Length: 146
Image (cartoon, rainbow, N blue to C red; front, top):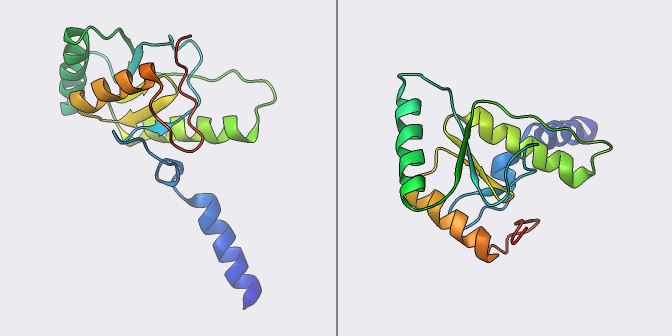
């Protein structure tokens, strides 16, 4: 019975949602490993292109609001990682980044942080906070000033 309980606990630990397990910023963003090619100090917005869905409309509104706020935005519909011999922290960050992407569009990545379907206010506040380096969550790696 003890072995079954230990195995059940192990399976639960392995299967838990990597996003909900991470400490989130006050804006709801979680620390992630940034995808390859993501521009520093720019917001990467991932969503299907030329799609009439509600997700696409939310994405267009978010991009428009970020641009109006003077925040650089890069659009995309996929991402990848090219990491040789990743550390445990990098693997965890990549898992969180993929989990955010799987939660639905728009998936927003900025300065080592990510969130699925943030409001414009959340994305703008997180961008400004990471640019100033004020996010102090566990394991945060805000890439400030680079």
